[in-house]
Length: 519
Image 1 (cartoon, rainbow, N blue to C red):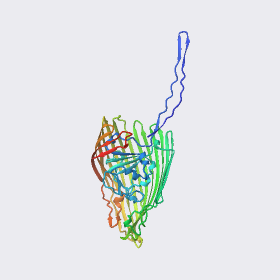
Image 2: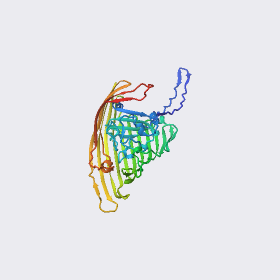
Image 3: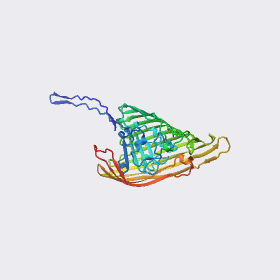
Image 4: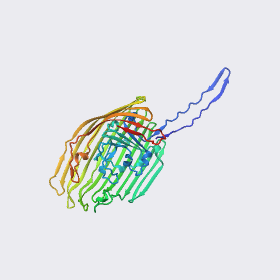
């Protein structure tokens, strides 16, 4: 939805209908010119319009009404509407370890590092170090639409969409109210509150929003297996955001976003507390004139800390096994898109993007007598820069889509260091060689819509993702299983072909949402 602000000016036209006659001469007075009406200013707060060729792909759209009706007020619960979308763990973000919150699509196996690309107003959202998703950062009251594309080859949306793309969009002016607030209280002393205030004016709007939730939590271990160490897992989470959209002129708008979150959880036993926090800022200039364009720049900061405990077989005692006391990470990027005017039947998007991430983990481990004996530090950085083109052609009932991108990636400054706290020579001191490479990916599809309610489609795609810094450089242990870091991991790639039919019941029928079937 959009908000339209019109500025009108009253103009007066004076006519003199009487001719001033003199012998043989007729004199008339011409009317005064009508003042020009100022151009209409349309402010949406969104990016460039959806491409017509998107109908060739399996896309699920979740509108604001559905987002607002979620009883849990949690993004991961809303995303459960999308068949095939999965997290690494089934628990939501009140009890799961944050590092297990990766998302994937198409049944390509959930893992801690997301295999789907998550965007919020065009900005990548995965943790720069580990690739997991900080779900408590996204209060559902801020969201206006969620768009999920099942299948890789993301094209203009950016690299990293191995199995698909999840696009979050902020609420538009027509979806906002001057003030909205809600608070709920429930069992286990739980509180869930959200509030927002919006100021909508001609040529722009501003929104301030916040969310807070806490609870004593439930006991994660089933009753039959509990021991003395088991207890409820409390949580406390908060987020806030400020968003301003300003009309630069009749076809151009400037969007400024800033947000922050904090998330503290416990997994139901001693030495299992964890904490996440972060802040984002982005600036986007969108032009919707004859030449459409979008220019985006963003900055992300993240920090994570977690402790781990070892529980004996009788579940009567817990001893600390790891203290991951700090994991700072930073993401910095930009993207430019251009839509040349090629007529109503052809749509073309050209552009370039770049994303640089860096981070490290700092840990105390190898505990003896309740005290750590070693310190580990591991991390590095990576950069991905790409060029892309994505085109659509509408020919009657048939729509063709073709897009591709070429990405250049680098992985550098990787290291793993493990040293005794008592001093002495390092146990491990590895410096990884810098690497670089090129990936070419794309997608193609055809959609045939004989009637408005039915669309047949077939598509093929190739997607990829770069290993996270966590996968490259950080070893870890779960129970008796130890996973070594592998600094030589190559990019993960996926190729797929699919076909399906989308049925859209008429407005007012029992099911207002599209039904999509894919084979």
